[in-house]
Image 1: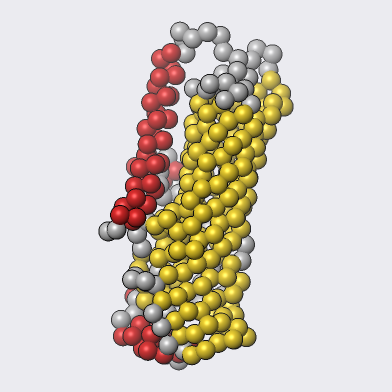
Image 2 (image 1 turned 90 degrees about the vertical axis):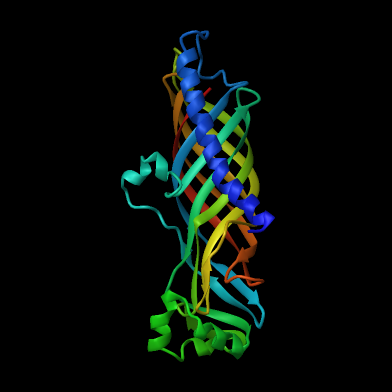
Length: 309
């Protein structure tokens, strides 16, 4: 494992575990110190931290995906993809499986009652829709296809046996007018462990309503920012590939807006949406120097809950 891969793995796994630990610690600390503190007003946020956890549903724009390596360089045009949410089950409340669903984790510090900086992780999942027809352009050396069919992935074996001529369509030069169906022998491509957006945001909270006793409030939260994107890509390119290691694959920028309801002086619920742009210029695919690149827009619907300390 390379030093870059180790760093990516550390960022993805340790980052979320550290924030989970901090949230738990401050939850205990706040409950112990609440009785000793001065009367609290929900609008007095300066110098305070907020920690929140939630889940998302995501959607993506179409994307051109370029694949390159020894003997080939080609691009699939306007490829559709979708997210991969977990079905409603105990996985959402099992602390040992918190990394499985599409989750959102964020910590914020308020420099004033309204302005804050936030850092966190959006764990999204991205799956190229199988079976879709796409136009493609570029070049594939016929020897590459021959080598790949000698050592095919499990997913592609049956399709290569039943339709041996399908993958041969990829051989040679292509100008962009031809169309091919993304069956298992042609492509499997997903960031499902996942599409991890590690961000730093600057934000502002706008009060909409505050209870007279200061215990609850309704606010509008907005922020903008960006950061790196760590992918773990599961790819099969022309029948060959693997589930790759975590890797810093590119960057993203985004804007977020949400409605926050604060209650019991300390806790809050938040419903928001985040839209942005992701550019992945260094995606691992089938080992060695084989790579892919793509860029796309995304939109998340996020529901989360949190605590102010």
